[in-house]
Length: 134
Length: 161
Image (cartoon, rainbow over all chains, first blue to last red; front, side, top):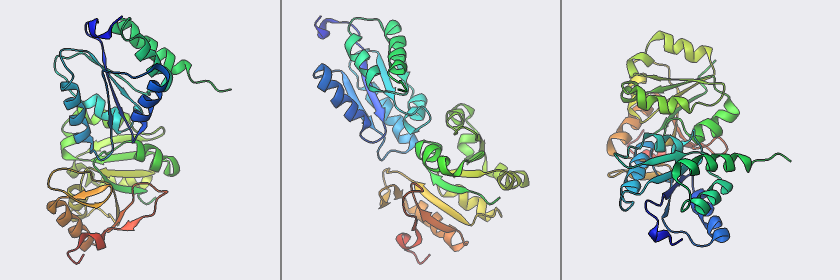
């Protein structure tokens, strides 16, 4: 399926500490190939207020009325808190904490074929299932 | 017990505080001193939710922080005090709260601020407030994480602190 023909393909915004988001994306692209409709925002240099505003600006810049899935790393960290604080008006923005590689692979693999309400529980399940103590 | 950490950090409770400082120091009580946060329960809840396991976090106005009961709590608990900027600790010190040392752990870039350290940017007003804290006998150290060396901030402020 041509992604350009898929209406309301969810856009991904990765908000993470340091270079974690860009490295996660680089790794995803190493596995699945180049991805579009995704952006990365590092918390480097941002106060809590400024990070929240930066998230709002990035989401505002997403073209059209695309839904956005906002991935953050630590729920109880600056990224998780700023993502909760950020307001997005009428746009559909779903927020997921604890981002990891299995979760992102699932997202990019299925975002064009599954509706968001089915995709999000899968992300949570895959993210958790990827953790195993051997 | 003496206050374990009094910290200026415009991110308030976040990863460095929860894991970096909270891991080794194991706080049982965290007071965020901020009039604006105290007046906004919704926003305060986002930070209080992030408190590390084993710690109870509260948002306090400056006047609440100056109550004897707050001092008693900081003495009875393994306590952290967090401030979004220099104004709050300055007003506590001026109000008689026994602050002896304040860690400047994160004041991030904004328009009109000048970089002092990679994680400390100061506006002229903030610089003056920090100098005032030093003049009141508060030792200011810059230290983002306990595993990194603490630096005296005063020599970086100018102004003959």
